[in-house]
Length: 144
Image (cartoon, rainbow, N blue to C red; front, side, top):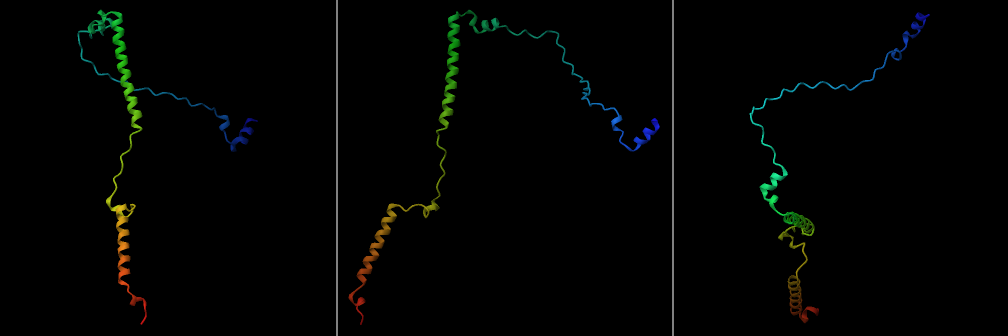
């Protein structure tokens, strides 16, 4: 009976009978890194100075509390002044006018005429009208 069923399935896809495995992200081993040997020093490094050591060096350790507070406050106000000046400069930079482009002298025709140019033109027209009036005589108007 099993042989008959297998013969029926011979033309079908067998994937449904095969096991399905989920893929896992397996990390590959990193190669062993060989570190360079450091130079051997027989003496240990100097210890880092403590807060008290730093105060003794600067002289703050021997000051009174109100003197320390005054110095701290002076540093704070100085820092605030610097920040305030920077912000003022940034705000003022918004009001600075951009550089203007220079005009070319070739654009005289495009520019509006000046008062002197108009005055000269008007006077020239008046002179030409006067000359025409003087040149005309009675004989010009009377036919012969």
